[in-house]
Length: 89
Image (cartoon, rainbow, N blue to C red; front, top):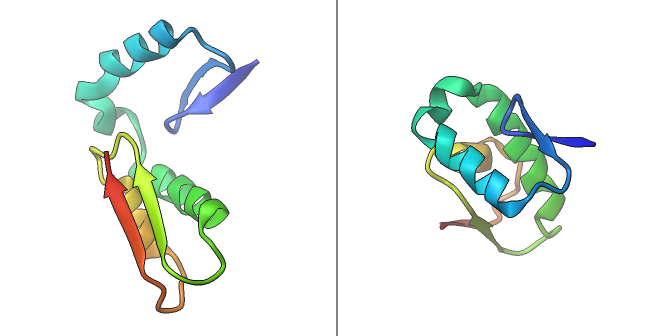
């Protein structure tokens, strides 16, 4: 079974960590040319909705935040004056 990664890439559902690292290292320099920003922002919005608490502030850790898609996703959320802290790693 394969899992969709990054807009249009598929990896085995349980890939060897070295395979995943090699894959991400290989495409890191050209990632923005290989993906569709609108699709990634839409996906990030859905993921954020899944983890945000119903009320109160939220602190979200964004791994691999080099492209800034999560920041754009936070801007696209329909939240009612709730502080959302997006921390990049």
